[in-house]
Length: 295
Image 1 (cartoon, helix red, strand yellow):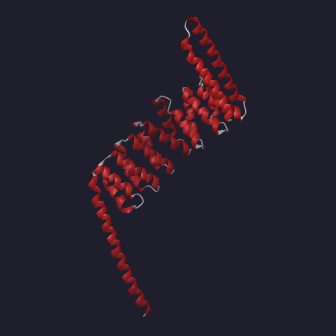
Image 2 (cartoon, one colour; image 1 turned 90 degrees about the vertical axis):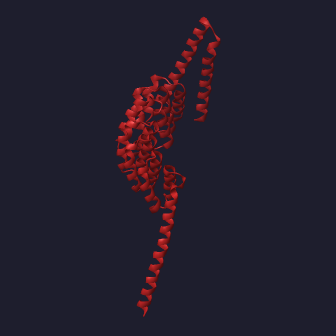
Image 3 (cartoon, one colour; image 1 turned 90 degrees about the horizontal axis):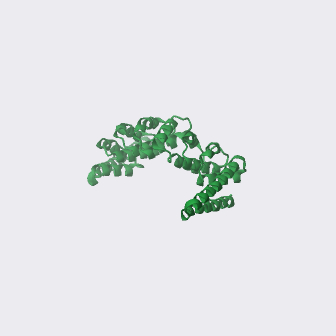
């Protein structure tokens, strides 16, 4: 496979050199040379398309890779089909090629392909989608938030966060009740990046989520929003949740200033002292009960 891709790389490099050297020619010589180079390019693309359509796994890998470097709209149909190929590398290179071509008809297929189980392939699919015009991407990806596949919802939410599209806030907010914690986390992260204060209440409610990742994400989102209404629930996290305490303290410090965590730390000391006092009283009562029972 590597040898095949290396050979294609050499071929593409040579073609690029020929195309780059055209400026050295003038007049009819340049026009003739340009036509010949274009003819060679068309021939190479046609061979790659044929290999992608009819070749074995190794040939399909090389062909998909080659088309990602020599993108051509006439390959769109086969590249869309290649998104369903059994081979991870073929799917990955095919998505990259479609991202380079940016044919609008392929966008919905790339969004559907977000369900891919291979995270590396899904990453390349995401990168390909991001190369399309923002308006097209937002429309296509927003619809994917309602797809039953968890991977698609999770990756679609992350994409909308990367795009920082405020019109997606309501749909992302709905995902905060998604049954899958990974989807809820990506929704929280996306809302953090978008930074719309209207979701403050929903993010505060996420501090009580059963998933520690979602609770952590909510703390960071509230920290980013910078609204003082988040202080009280963050203090509660400091007092009640040791695992997330340091993150909540940092959020309070950023919201209210360097000295703002002192009352929280003092309250924690008081709670610790109270725990010791109550424990001592409980143990004292236990000893009395034990002596009474044994007499």
